[in-house]
Image (cartoon, rainbow, N blue to C red; front, top):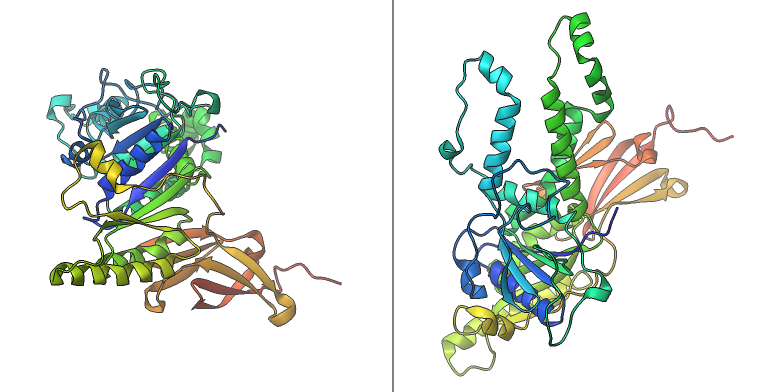
Amino acid sequence: MSAVVRTVLVTGPGGSGRTTAAAATALTAAREGRRTLFLTADRTGAPETVLGVALPSRPAGPPRDPGPASAGAGAAEAPWTPPVRVERNLRAARADSGERLRDAFLGLQQRASSGLDLLGAAPLDREELTPFPGAAELALLRTLSALYTLPAASAAATGSGSGSETVTGPDGDWDLVVLDLPPAQEALALLALPEQLLRYLDRLLPPERQAARALRPLLAQLAGVPMPARWLYETADRARSELAAAQAVVGAESTTLRLVAEPGPAGRAALRRIRPAVALYGHRVDAVLAGRTLPTGSADPWLGAASGEQQAALKALREEWSGTAPLYELPHLGRAPRGTADLAALGAPPVAAPAGSRPGPAVADRREADGTLVWHIPLPAAERGEVDLIRRGDELVVAVGPFRRILPLPSALRRCTVSGAALADGELRVRFTPDPALWPRTS
């Protein structure tokens, strides 16, 4: 597989200034000479306000039923609006949440036309379709899928300093993509969807059984029951390809998460609530941005008290995220940021190369000490009352508050029974005892 373009996913609690922080991050990178694409699904005027440019509301090109192979190949095919120039090396676009989904629905309707005709159903026209609930989330999934095949700029082509830009083609070759995500809880659920939906799809239509599609008429005749239609398999194949591409981007070594919060009790508590889920899903955080930080040393009693509260929260955040991600402060400008001059004044930190490994479970062999194998699952900041787990066959279902992930057991643990679990030192430790009936005997 080709390398996935460097991607920064920006999220945080609602109202924390995510879009502003994402735009400031993109601007910093662009002014370092990196060709940067800023993408947002925000349908309000916030992106236009902070960037100082108008973004199209509709994608370019004629209506179509897009496929994953061509996603990202050009502005007319990508699931976002035509990128608009903000300044040198920086383009901005909005993830399309309407037209492409209408295309997909109409394409599905066309493939199911024979069945609909038998039912006497009248097909829907494009003009009848209104925006679907959850369309923005589905648009972001298609955006993640398209990033898998988005051309990444070569090191030799990367521009810096003054001179002409080197963005090539209708959609460019990018060094960096900054994706402005919804609020944190919604964003984490969205980023977990590709893995979950792939699992559901593989259970309902296992890939290894699709080889029988060519024998469908014969099997239907022998079994005496109708078999799944060919279009159903083809739709499942397309969905599987797009979900796998989105999952590849989410799990790529070149993808990191950047968290934004206001420094205060509420912002700190919000980050603490999502931190276990960030680790459970294996996301690597490259920075925590504390937005709207007030100046210190003010003689004004109200401003001094508010600043003092922020400084206490900043100290706590540095301690809590120490060893995981650096904390940066984005100053309060005394006004809502408007345009690139204000974004530059925020001084967003540069996007460095991903460091360290992704958080993930690890097995410790303690058979000689107490006869067990211990699976260590990172869950920093998790509280005992919000953690639940269930063994289901060769999988372990781990839930932390509203977040849930199904983890396939390593082969050694599949031959064991769960003998206990404990939450300690920021991780869930699940003890497994080898099953004598399944464990290999040693002479």
